[in-house]
Length: 635
Image (tube, rainbow, N blue to C red):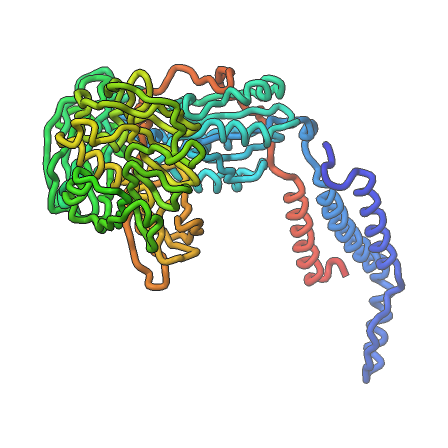
């Protein structure tokens, strides 16, 4: 028997001090209560009883003393918190990371139980199997690692933490989980990290190699309990929308379907606009294929789009989380554009094609005009200083060698060609530039952060970047010395650039990615905004530089309220690039260069605390003393 509270010496001290006081109280002379009696016979009875029962009465007092000493002894030993022999030996110190990522929503084909529920049951078994000196901390692993319990051996606290676990629409971040485990388990005896997961961790996105040395030197065991088996699935890997530059009443939608399995799948893809069905297509997605489909000329939709996917080949789909995606259409609003030009009919004609542009023309000598503009266009003119608005430079030749210019000019390129085009950039969408003829272009030097959207082998032709925190686009050639204005690509390039600036300035994205920090545009100068997630939960979030900062973990449509008028706007969030659609668990998990092993087993032992029973014993003795007192056995 080992005392883990007061030491044995301290227990004896308490017992001796309090027990001695009880004995002294019992040895004090008994003072009888004075009773006035009217009859002499009563005195004879009292004296007779005192003479005949003196020894028995004294025995009664010793029995009461014994009961009191037993109560004192039980309480004193309870203060010592006695435990079974060996209870103070070092037990395991466990950090259990429960994967709560989107892939854990996958269901098992046999019983329909999700992997997340299976992980919760496994956690319950680990709690039950804890040894008498084992301690455990439960943490949820999603886009971050969140402890849900302290390091404790209290099964009730750990079970409450298990109930607080919640699966989310995000990818698991093993780097955050490993950082938490290494910090908590530092210098702890028999330390072990137990991962309850399907093992689908994105090591490329969340590199854990920085912790390899710490994990190796710490002697912390790393184990993994596998959740789930190989199942079939096909999901939506990408979903985006944008309005046509020349007709903003219509839009184009991109949907990417991802089949991470080896088998061919037949699915039905439904597109809904503002809650109404717009189009339905039946598609076949081959194993390992990312199938892209465009919905063109979508009209009659003002705010939201939704894509829904369901299998039609009779095979089950075990992950419903990636079968829906949402997007928000950009607002149709007029953009104010100022053009500084000595005269360019090609530029003026192209700007007339967009009815949502408010164009103000000015001569270079009028720079800068007063007022707020969304975009400034400089035609063969470079302002003396960087503008305070997004700018498009057409042939940016500085007036003098010492004058400011967005790009440093080093020479001239004769007859350049569009040899390389970044087709993923929004500036060149819906354009054909491969056979455009250009007389000359400026040989420019790019700065750090600049990007050549189109280039000749000898130098860039279309450049994007930022100067003084303002985005810019530069055409290094004079459009009037090319056949570009005779092609449809010319107005598309121009309007794509303006749309790119306006949407970037407004912070527009068709959908955010769950698990990331979002910066949602907020108008009205509000400092605090309210975001309502797809489940209806409201949260007040800060507004920094006109944007509400929020890390979302649910896919769906959100509502944003800000300002004194409480105006509401909606925005969308989706799972991301499709990595969570892979639900085939690996055979092994490797983190920070360490291959996970099997979880250790707890040693059998009595974990109950004996002091509780000693307190109950003291209460039982008090009950016995009360009963015997009222039966006049101990007085």
